[in-house]
Structure formats: structure tokens, C-alpha cells
Length: 354
Ligand SMILES: *Cc1c(COP(=O)(O)O)cnc(C)c1O
Image (cartoon, rainbow, N blue to C red; front, side, top):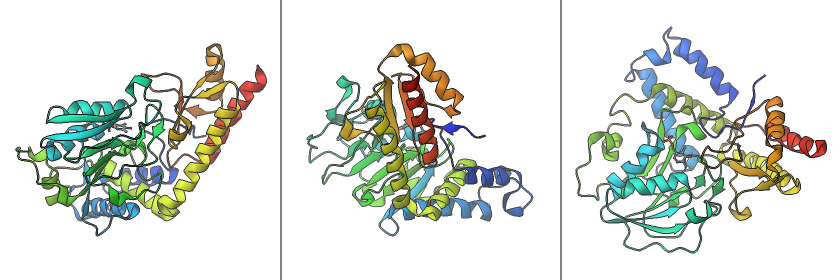
């Protein structure tokens, strides 16, 4: 039986999608060729990437609104510097809410002045700073919607005239937001969309063309837009599987539908973390992530016992990020509610046993 996969990334994908992807590896479109051995310029593959790009915009409600969707490579980590390369003239404002935000700040510093308008670093990123202000003359404001390592999530985004850039790697397509407020959104595929190897970048085209520096072609968003996301060979398998996952989500009822399921999963787990005296949540309640729930045991001596129990229950990937320890249950779109129930049952069984 398939494990209950709480891995933070690469993460669980819908079983249907894996089935279709495995078929395409052997025989794509009944052409008697594999998806990964045909030309990326073939009609069959161009249709795939165009479908993936349009589904991404459609699900976010951004069709015909001046946005472009690109499937690039280099992970979200390359976006940390591409964003600055393409948008930072003099200064940019960043919100430091976690490990990944911290890395984005580090990369941007090579391109201009970086103002950290708020940070929870001193508190181990266990909350989202609020009440910060964004300088009117910043080239853009960068934030991380969901902090995958810490387990916190922004519930509100600032009202600002400055272009809004957001790393949504670990919660894109998981909840409804007013996506039109954002000028640039990026997300590594492997958290909630597909296999590693592709990064989705959604750009409002009119924010480009405002920096003076020369931008190398591979790092230049405008070139990728002009080439329909095919400047070089895209990561065909990752794009294909992302397309299947986006189609799966659309068929289910889109973000509106999945958000309700995601809320149910998170409520079930957090209720147990709060009720069960053996567990404690890590993040301030109002900032808790719907995608990645972080928690610890109140008594470290139970670690071995608890670890044995959840592994025996068929659970995978519950250990916290190597930098913070504890536990992290990642509940991405494809994780069934039933898997969360299995975890809650194990937590209750531990309580009964001691
Ligand atoms: C995983 C993650 C990243 C890094 O993604 P890569 O694709 O591995 O570069 C960046 N930001 C967030 C929020 C993440 O969860």
C-alpha cells in the first residue's frame, strides 16, 4: 500500500497523475515514443507546455490580465537572483519570514540596496511580522507566502503601490488569494505542483524593462516570455507532470475546492496538537501554515517511541527540516484527509500508551 506521504518536498502527487505520467514515459499520445525522447519543439510537446501555461493562469484567475506564465529551470533558488537581476534598480524591500526568505535577501544584496522591513529571525521565524511599512520608492516588495521550514503562512498581504513579488513555492494553488495584487509570483514545482525540475513564474509583463543593467539571456524574463517559455529545452517531464496536476486540480473544482479540503486537514491536525498534552505547536496560532504544520513532543524521551509508531502506521516524511528538528506534517493538495486522520490516530495512541 502507498505510504501516507507528509514529505515537505519533493512531495506527494495525485495517484492518477503518477499513473498517466508513467504511461507517457513508455508511450506518449500513442505515438510509440516516450514523452522524454521526443523533440520539445514537436507539436505534441508544444501543446503540453501551452496547456500548462494556460492552466496555471486560469486556476489563478489571471487570464487576459497582462500576465505571462513561464516554466523555467533552476528552482525557486534561481528566482531569488533572477527577481533582483530583472527588477532591482536601486533598492528593494524584503520581509524576512524564514529560511527561504533569508536566502532571497542574501541573493538580492548583490544587485542593490535591500531593506528588510520586518523579520522574525531572532525568534526562529515562529511568527509573521506585522505592521511594517514599505518604502514608497522601493523597486519592489518581496515576501514568502508560506514558510515551508518554519511552518508559518502569511494570511494577509500589504497594501502597497510598490510591485509585489512573492515566493509561493509551498502554497501556490492551495488557497484562494487575490492573485491580481501580485506582480510576480514564483514557485518551484516540487512542493504542490509536480516533480522537481521546473519553476513556475507568473509575471505581470509591464513590470519588466525598468532596469539598466545588461541581463544574460537565460536570466532575462523578457527573453523567456518572447520565446514562449522555450528559449532553451524546457524540463519536459516536469512540465508534463505539472500540466497533469493542474488539470487534476481544475477537474476537482479548482483552488476553491481544494482550499476547503486543505482547511479541513489543517484543522484536524492542529486540533490534535492543541488538545494532546504530549504535543506542542511551534508557530504563533494566527500564523500557522495550512500546508506545513510544525510541532514538537513535550517530552523528548518519547521521540523513539513516537517515531516507531508513525513509521509502523505507514507514514513517511514527518521529520522536521534538518535545520530545526521536531516534526513537520506537510499537507499539500494531493494528500488525502484520511492520511491526516492516520497521523492523528497515532498521536492519540501514543497518549493512551503512556
Ligand atoms: C523549497 C523552497 C524553495 C527552494 O526551492 P528550490 O526549487 O529547491 O530551489 C524556495 N522557497 C520556498 C518557500 C520553498 O519552500
